[in-house]
Length: 309
Image 1 (tube, one colour):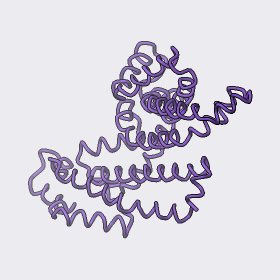
Image 2 (cartoon, rainbow, N blue to C red; image 1 turned 90 degrees about the horizontal axis):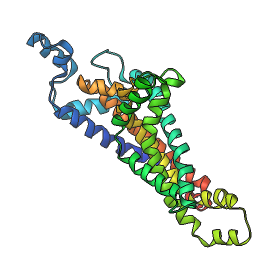
Image 3 (cartoon, rainbow, N blue to C red; image 1 turned 180 degrees about the horizontal axis):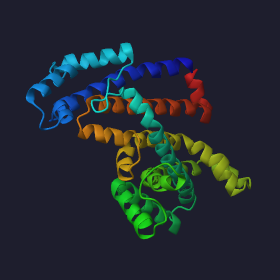
Image 4 (cartoon, helix red, strand yellow; image 1 turned 180 degrees about the vertical axis):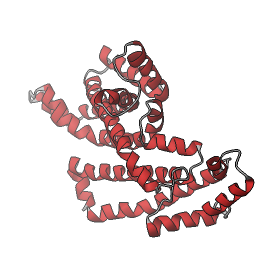
């Protein structure tokens, strides 16, 4: 197990290098001058040129990228924000807990809705509940998060006045962002749970348990669900990683002071270090979540644990 974890951690190195190169390239070729945006449109050309020289923006692409990787590897330095002159890592660590909380609440909403709905749909296949839940899952996958968030604000904040339209400091303020972020994942988890459960409940050992007179709830929860968890856990882990990055629009709609909103502001102001650092941090978190899911397999299926050994 330890060798497997070490090997997966070493695999993160080329992944992070690839992500950093792609993001750095995209920011480099994007039109716009960060120095001009920092100083304003009325700034003198001499002042803009001096600032570009101070920031190293006049150097070639590979020189800038090499300097970025060197500072990251040797000094663990992601640079300083062009806007606030604060270290990028400080800004990311200050915002990431909010994004992590939002993504965790979104996954919680998705699991609470998705897994029970998928189990009931599988055990009552082709029933009215199954048909309605599958239509709902299709709608959940199809609806864009930003449109759903705006509709929820109009309904619950503007018309009914039950919930606040923005913020993330109180439990009431967390409800709408969590629902907006979690419903699309709930639809995916529902479909995967239903598919996995249908495959398991048709196995011979399930029929044997029924023939022995075992209670249906015990068959579903103890025998079927436990053996159907591998693909469900995979989807939940992937969705958690996606929600960390997908929180960008949700945070913007509900004015949540998280990492996603920080990156949106950084992109609009050509704040290269913040964008690069934010994307790298999300990619690292996503990879760690996938590693955790792979390790969790060993506790769900003893056969996988034996392969690790």
